[in-house]
Every structure is written in C-alpha cells, then in structure tokens.
Image (cartoon, rainbow, N blue to C red; front, side, top):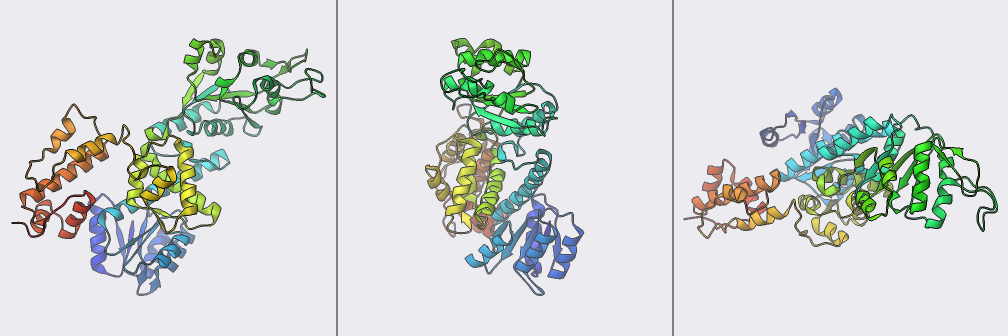
Length: 483
C-alpha cells in the first residue's frame, strides 16, 4: 500500500506499524510522488495525509478515485473536523483517521479497506455474470458461502431440480435467480410464486391455469405460471406450504413434464425448469403426513442449504459495508464508517433475520446517521437490542474468559492457558482466544512491573502510548508510578 505524508517521522511510524502486521508499503512525501505511484497501479490501498506541501489531500483523493475507482483511500490528518470528514467521505474516502492515530484503529481501517475492495471486485464480477444487482446473500469470503457459489456454478448449466433450504432472510430466492441467470434458460422468464401466500383453493389455478367455466368466476381461459415461465424457470418458494392436492399435480408435472389446467381435458407441455425453496423441515413433514414423500424426492435431487448469517461471521463486516454504500447511493447520503465498537457489535449480534436483517439495519443506520461514524449503541437501538448482545455460541466464551481474568491489582497469578483448556468452558473462536491471551498477558506484565506502565511497556516491547491504548482497549486499570 502507498503511504503519503510530508512528515518523515510519521511515514516511518506508519510503515513500521503496517509492515509489522504483514503489509508491504511504499512511501511518498508529496502529491507529485503520490500521483506518479498511483498512476503505475498495482496498489491495494492508500493512506493519504490531508495536507501536503504541494497538494490538497481532498483534491488528490478525487483524482485517485477517478483514476482507480476501486482503490480504497484512508485519509490521515491532525486537523480533523466533522465538515472535513463529511467532505472526504462524499468524495469517496473509505475512512478517516486523525493524528495521533490509534494503532489498532488504523490497522482495522486498512484491513477493512482491502477486504471491502476485494468484495467490491467480487460483486462486479458476479454482476457481469448474473446481469442484475445482487444482495449479500451469496457474496463473501467465508467457506460456507464459497461452497454455495461453487454448487450454484456446477448445477446452473444443467436442468436438474434444486431444493433450496435455509432460514428466512438467508437469500433462497437470490440463489434460485442466480441458478437461472447462469443457465441456458437465462433469456427466458424467471417466475416466482410463494406457495404459502396464495389461498389453497386458488394455488392450483395460479400454477396450472384454468379454462372458462372451470369454477364459479372463471369467465375466460387463463394461463397459469407454468405457461408464463415457458422456456425458463419456475421458482416455488415455500413449497412446503402447498396443499396435498396441489402436491399431486406438482409431482406429475415433474415426472411427465406435462400438466392439466383446472377444468381442461387436454394436457399441455411443461417446458420449465423447477426450483423450489422452503424454510421447513420437509423430511419431518413427510413423516407427519404433511408432505408427499415421492414429491420430496423429486424436488430433493440437488439440495442447496443457505447458511445463516451467524455461521458466516467473517462476512458480516464486509456485507455491512456493501449495504452501507448501496443505501448511501440510493438515498444520496455520505457513506458512514463503522466504529470499532460497532464492528464488535455486528460480529456479536445473533442476526435472527439473517442477511435481510443486516441489509435493513444498514439502510436505517445510513438514513438516521447523525455523524460520519456509526456506533454500537445506535445500531443496537435500531435493532431493538442492548449495546452488549446476549451471548451466542460464538461469543459466550468471550465474556467468560474476560471475567476469568483477575483484577491486576489483586496480585492473583494469571494462567491464560487454563482459560483456553478448561474442559468446562466452550472453546472460543480464534479471535476471542487471541484477545483473551493478549489481555491476560498485558495484565500479568503490568502486575510483575508493580503497576509501572513504563517498565511494563518496555517488557512488552511497546512504546508507552501503545501500551496505554492496550490497557484501555481491554478495560484494565492501573496506577501511575508503580512501586
């Protein structure tokens, strides 16, 4: 990444911090050098000072955005104001960090900027393939969603029937649309119907059509959705809610590729690929007699289970930023940034409404944002939750581990290995384990230094400012002076 600042000490400090965390950096001390380097391309991100001797940082930002729209730029300044931050965000800055910068905040901004740029390229590639705007349901870098994309790519070129399962809000219809758009039927219609939203006595007519006089009120012939989807794809959403008499006719059309409109005596050809979805357990419904076993196996040729958002947490922040950008563009508002505590809240929330809930929350947060940054308390209020979410399977170990770390002034010895190996505790995530170990280590170092921050920072290999930041981040107390 490119670091642009006219203060050599600041450039050295930035490079040292970023390179210590695995990033490769190049440096420029003025606008001319920065322009020349950006023009050569092959950059993942830019950290740009607002004030340079030969250029205005906001003007450079605009130039960089024109030359490389997907290149994330993080503004760095000692002269930060709300107006300047808003202006920078309007011009397309990814983030805004003020000097003296917080080490962890800068690293988080850089990491999110690079991941966001990667996801944007992924979105653009997917749109070129699918040919329409997509939401975040099948975007991301997590293993579950990568598996879904791979399966979609494999089944799409065929005419095989696919049953998409998953909780509400996980993107079942989007997956079906993606299969259609990547198939040979893409130029023909994609027709969707929610089987649970149509009264049972009307669903048969909606699907198969009817002839004049078939029932009271049938004053003319009417084609159904199988006819409307001719040559294309018919998506049966919530197929588990279809009544048994309709299930019989669905089974026949899947077996014979022919159907009979209500009241008709002549069958019609069904040149349609059928995709179905449900959030019900159809196997259990088969056992209870609520769903036909033969139809289940006809639909369940290729199962595709959409993962809930809580099982793909590494995608949450990236998707949130995509939704923020989309909502900001739709409502012509600045793109708000996610504060560190907002990121923590997003990762800990249980997301009962899955991707749909995340998209709606980000839109509401964009419209109601009172500044350039979204905070955890604002998101929690919009979600109807507390600022500290109820523990989930992923987060419960975190609070336990932190509670298990003793007060550093108590003199009690800390054994972080025990925290992770105690069989009575659920095994935490890697991030939670790393945070727990770091907190325990810092507390122990300070205890052994008798509370002397300068001595503890020296032992930890950090400068005193960084060590104070770590103490505050982990909620540790200390006494000045030691002794």
